[in-house]
Length: 134
Image (cartoon, rainbow, N blue to C red; front, side, top):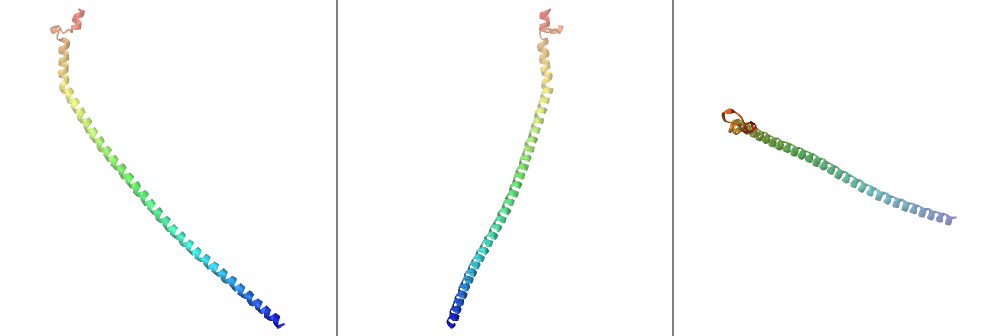
């Protein structure tokens, strides 16, 4: 009977050591998974920060690009307005010169035309064509 008790005690101690070994192994695995989880959470936080930084930079670049585009459009509009103003001035100058030319040259042209039409008709006031018909 004592022998049986000793065997049972040895078996119980062996089972206890085995259970403790399984518990320690499970604790090590649990600790390992905890470390892995913390590492992954760190990576996720790092990637989230990187994504936020990239999104912020992207938004800034987009805003800078939009501002540059608007500035370029404004500069083109100013240039267009300047060119239009120069064209209007040139049109005014041409119109003024044409008007002056008409005022100056038209009477002379009419006189020359009148002279051509009536040069052979003399005082009669008839054109060469009218004389030919008569």
